[in-house]
Amino acid sequence: VSIPVLTIDGPGGAGKGTISGLIAERLGWHLLDSGALYRLTAQAAVKHGVALDDEAALEALAARLDIAFPVEQGAARTLLEGEDVTRLIRTEQAGERASRVASLPGVRQSLLDRQRDFCKAPGLVADGRDMGTVVFPEAPLKIFLTASAEERARRRYQQLQAAGVDASLSSLLKEIQARDARDTQRSVAPLKPADDAITLDTTRLSIPEVVDRLIQLLAQKG
Ligand code: C5P
Image 1 (cartoon, helix red, strand yellow):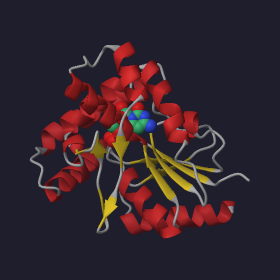
Image 2: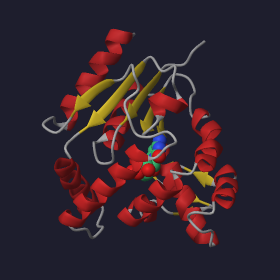
Image 3: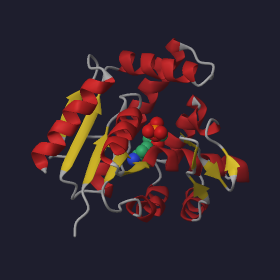
Image 4: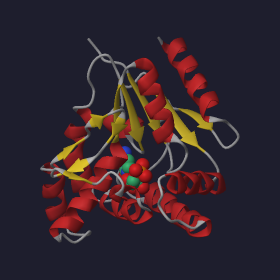
């Protein structure tokens, strides 16, 4: 029996995380936040003093990453080796480090099976950069979510403020542009829509509008 997978790829700040979470909740499906795995790999490297360009060491680190995503009282937490890193891995610095380790083929290979393990009945919403192109190429519905860099910076700013994290809008925009460049130009699994992906520009769409549109598309596929 094949398990339905909805892949949601796109640049940082396009709303993938929020949208993926809401859709998984609405459908009762599992959720893979693949970016968190790269953020956690980078965080483990910092913790263990591994250089962010030491591919062999990072590959080994990614392969034995000790992580958990417990949900307590409705709040999802992220644990690295038992330590709560929920907030720590959400900073811009953590994102920047994640993007560096994510450019290493060995690290991506190490995380491949772990990502596929998330695919369990009744279904999976997979959020990332290469969900439709590399990790779940057979997914029946692939979405590429985009929004202008300015709009994405504004959203990230609001998100960080809400989480109580200090940030500046102009430096967020610069970081988003730098991360876009690195993610789209890397040689392995670059950020790009799968050939059979549907691109949705969310610059002028509200969160409920995007969720409804995707549920509609899923219904058409089903
Ligand atoms: O989505 P998020 O911002 O958490 O991802 C952090 C970084 O991890 C991205 O900038 C990207 O470089 C990398 N990433 C990736 N492939 C994925 C998910 C994230 O390369 N599937």
